[in-house]
Image: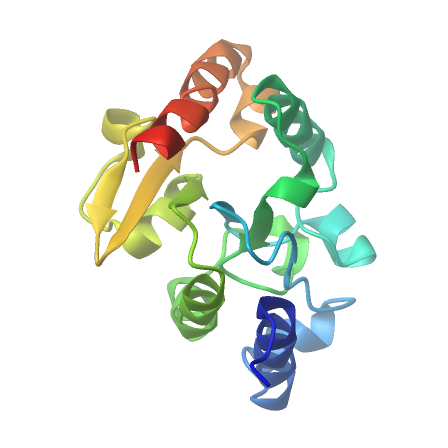
Length: 188
């Protein structure tokens, strides 16, 4: 019998632990933050790395940025159970520092496996680190909110929800990009 998408995702998660990916990060983190949501989602949101709240709860985007993400999902008549949310790096970097290039490189094959299993119509990258893993030659300030085809997938670069928390001027830009998602989904 064929395995469900959730079973395949569980296997990828177990493989990260077995393969001891970024073992130094793993040792200082509370737990692996793999991803959660609908394993058959038409949209996958990809952030950079877990923060403190995510590390404690084992779920991506549960802090203030996650609350804003939830609010935006509501604006487009979606819930977390409709989408899948993950990060490139699956362990919290110490002191919430940006993920290192080698950490992103180490986790990228596992993220690609997640996307291969889910087969979303859109991969929405949240922030420049996430976008640059897939679209390295682009500047997020120039392409945010514009779908881009690359390696057989549609990517939607979005500013990270946390940007709205640090810069009030960004909030409306982020919302304006986010509310395009249903129209983009219809066109694919």
